[in-house]
Length: 68
Image (tube, rainbow, N blue to C red):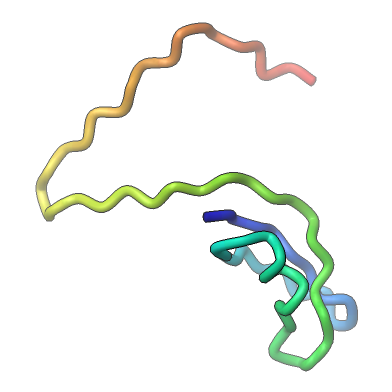
């Protein structure tokens, strides 16, 4: 699954969308009817838990600098 940040080519409305495959991004349209421009794409894996259940995520191995 993929998470994408898109912006409308006409009204400038930004949105985050989830798609199963990257080809689906080409079919995304804004509510105003214009097509969307992809700004960013990231892999996305949903995590489901029962209410009150804690999910342990694996620890990161190395610390990376956040500086650009």
